[in-house]
Image 1 (tube, rainbow, N blue to C red):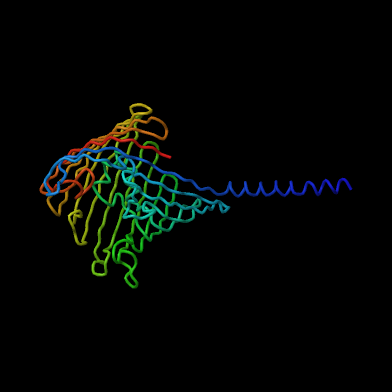
Image 2: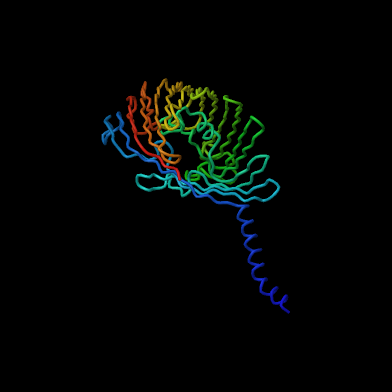
Length: 362
């Protein structure tokens, strides 16, 4: 009788223990991470247009001097046999006023879901194009505001309605992306029935990395975003390499651009770009870098030269102070500014800029 009573008393405890074990096991097989970056500072620019279009000086607060401010969620679930479900939702924030970036999208930086295994990852949604992944790795200035991404908008390209594959084969990693409509905010830029070329984007990249050396090539093709322009093409090809030697890392790169799409003041028909730079870790907290970017816009006879240098000092694993200085020499009416083409610079004017800020990762 006593043994039966003991068994009855123990049953709730055993059930509770079993439930806790199952819950712990389920929790161990899946995870969700909340993360973000808060980056803000002040910037001084010369050659900026005033209300009447004349070149003058500009002093302003700036968001994202080193890395664009953002907040995101990412997670995975272990499905067994090495297969995982993965997702990421990431939105850009202008920390100076709290507004969403990327044309007001809630998760404009990335929004995808997919599967990953030892054969690679296949994801669907709004994603970084291979040219973006390329520029992050091969910008001597570590993808700061002043640097490679300002010399070509596709270095920060993202594609709506896309499927992307990433895989590794020993020292070789590959990427491929296909979008049925790379920008859903443009009229007819999403997906038009019967017109498969409208807003289409195709990208591919391959990287080889072994020891201190790495090299990467990338190709990107975008069609026009209307039925009338869908046969037009904007093509990019880029190649770059890096070599690590003790505390120093050297960078060289090249980008080719050819476009038959209708042009505006911030686009080009044909251009070649060359760059080189050096990153040097002075000490554990202090890193210096400098780079030069020269573009030959053959379709317009313009040859802007972009020079920049950065210094970052780590206060902790999550918080750093930074400064960056830059100079752009424009020629024959080119309008490259330190923050990109046709942005905060009077065409044909040179520009000097200085930025100071703080960045925190969480």
